[in-house]
Amino acid sequence: MSRNGLVTASAAIVLALSAVDRAPAQDAVKIGLILPMTGQQASTGRQIDAAVRLYVQQNGANVAGKKVEVILKDDGAVPDNTKRLAQELIVNDKVAFIAGFGVTPAALAAAPLATQAKVPEVIMAAGTSIITERSPYIVRTSFTLPQSSVIIADWAVKNGIRKVVSIVSDYAPGIDSETSFKERFTAVGGQLVEAIRVPFQNPDFAPFLQRARDAQPDAIFVFVPSGQGGAFVKQFAERGLDKAGIKLIGPGDVTDDDLLNGMGDAVIGAVTAHLYSAAHPSDINKAFVAAFKKANAGMRPNFMAVGGYDGMHLIYAALKKTNGATWRGRARAGRSRSIRKRATSCRTFTSARSRRSATSSTTSSSRPSRPSKIRPKPRRSNLRGPGHLRASPLPLWESVASCQRKRATSRVRGFPFFVSPDPSPGSELRSEPPSPTRGEDNRVCRSAVEHPSGEGAAC
Image 1 (tube, rainbow, N blue to C red):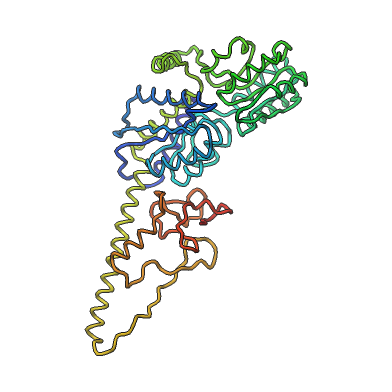
Image 2 (tube, rainbow, N blue to C red):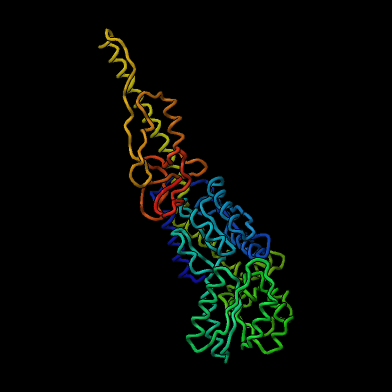
C-alpha cells in the first residue's frame, strides 16, 4: 500500500476512534483477526497471520502505552462463520478492531456489525471495489481487482491480443475483475468473445477450459481466488491450451508467490499484473522478504502478506494518533455513567414517594385509606411510526430494588450497545440512549438495522 494511502486510511481510523469524547482506554487493545486458516483459501490465512506476527515481533506488542493482543479466528472463508465470529469478538472479547477477511463475502458479512458497534474493520485481503462503501468504519490495506485487471487489458492490446475469453469465479471479485477488464479491453480495441463464470467452491475447470478453447481466442483472461491458481494452471496445460497458442493472462492472484513453485513448468508463459511481487528488487522489499522467510521457515511472502503487514502498521499508526484511546474504552465509560444515572433516578423517585407518604399520613390520618388510582403516564417508544405507546417503565410507587431491576432489563442483552432513535444512517447504536427499543411483545431489539426498510428498528 502506498504511503499516501496508509496516511489516508490511518486518518479514517483516527476519525472513527475519535467520533466521541475521549475517555480512558482499555489496558489492552484487542484485535480480532478473522482469516480462512482451513479450506481452499488457507494459503491466504497462513500468509496474513504470518505477516501480522512478524509486524508485532519487529515493532513490539505495546503501542501508545497499551498492550496489543491479537485474537485469531478461523472462518474457513464461510460468510456465516465470519459474521458469528465477528459478533463473538465484539461482544465477548471486547475487541477494538476486527481485521483480516480473506474473501469478499466474509468482509461484507461483518460490515453491518462494524457499523453497529462502531468498531473499525481493516480489510487485509478481500479485493472487490464495493467493500469500503458498505460501512463508514471499513478501511482497506490490500488492493482492488480493477487495479490489476485494467493494467493487463492495456498490456494485452499492446502485445497484439485482440480476441479474449474470460473465465472468472462466480462471485463479487470475479465479476468485478471481469467487468473492469472488459470495459478497458473493448475501449482500446479488443473483443471479449465469451464471458464464462465458474463456481466459487470446489470448481472443476476442465469443461470451462474446453469451452474456451472451442472459441479459438488469442488469450484467456482468468481470475480465481488466491489458492486456486495452481489447479487452474494445471488443467490449462492438461487441456493443451498452451500448445494451441492460447496465452494465459490475468491479475496476480493466479500466479501467487506462495504457490508459484508448486505450479511447475505449466505456468511458464503466463502473464499477470499485480501490486506486489516477492522478486521486486527494492531494498525495503528485500529486507521484508528476508525477515518473513526467517520467521516462517522459508515461506515466501505474497501480496496477502503485504496486506496483513500494512494493516497492522495502519492500526499501530492510528493508536499512536489517539494515544491508545479507542471507541471501546469510551463505550465502557458511557455505560458506567448510565448505570450510575439510573441508580440516582431510582433513589430520587423513591425519596419523593417517601416524603409524600409521610406528609399524607400526617395531614389526612382521619380519612379512610383507599387504593391509589394514579396511572402511569404513557410515552412514545423509540419505534418509528405512529401509535407505538407504552407505559412508563418507572411508576412512582416502585421500591429502589424493583426500580433498578426493571431498569437493568432495559439493556440490550448480549450486545454492548443500545438502540438509538437517531434516524441518520450508520448511527443506529450509541452507549447511552434515552430509552431502549422494544417490540409490541416487550422483547428487546437486537439491532436497529433489521427493519425491512433499513430505516428503523424492528424486533
